[in-house]
Length: 281
Image 1 (tube, rainbow, N blue to C red):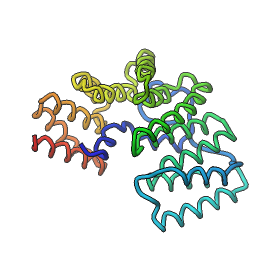
Image 2 (cartoon, rainbow, N blue to C red):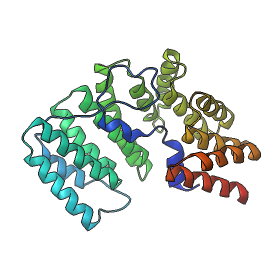
Image 3 (cartoon, rainbow, N blue to C red):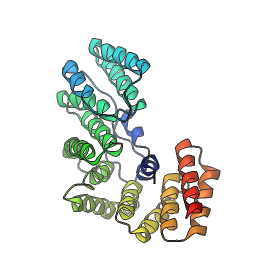
Image 4 (spheres, helix red, strand yellow):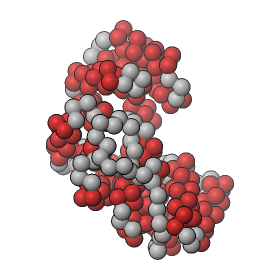
């Protein structure tokens, strides 16, 4: 299966939506990602740029992207007020993310969070490193990004220990480490506290897929769709599990429903590729 298709399946609930809205206490009972947001002032922009430039990426920045990011770096360094710092930092991170350079965005966010360790700032850094782990080119880089994500997620939980979304995402940073049970334990703690918390259910479903327990994965994604009938990423994963269980007619029905209902280009592409793979086997 293609790596880009796997990423679509493994990324659950629109992670990037976390990055630009302020946290509002405990997110228990919510199924959308709602941490992170504003910032104040960065004292280490030059150091951050040098570190960010050393990161490896699937594709280098184009001349146009380099020009845009250079201008945004200058704007960030020149910003004087809190409000202008917020806008400049978010614009710079968004430009890196649009270019799929999540690790570079994370470096700037982390440097800022180190200077100003509020919940908002450490949560943003952790989430960006989590995205960088998801899109890492190899296991070594993914492990490095996951380790950094845990550092900032731990800081966020020290401030807001009942943040179920942070626990759910932090759990996934342990998956490819020597101690994956730490992640499973975290997810079980979340489910014990909130049995219908969709991000935790989704992640448990992903772990089932990664361990080839497709029956358990089917159960998790079916449960999510009962809670959120329009969760098309859960439907994609359900279709994948059903196909692996040789329940092809059921899988086709689920995937065709995604084609009919989803308006997301990546979801539609994933559904088509899964259906095509089923026809080949």
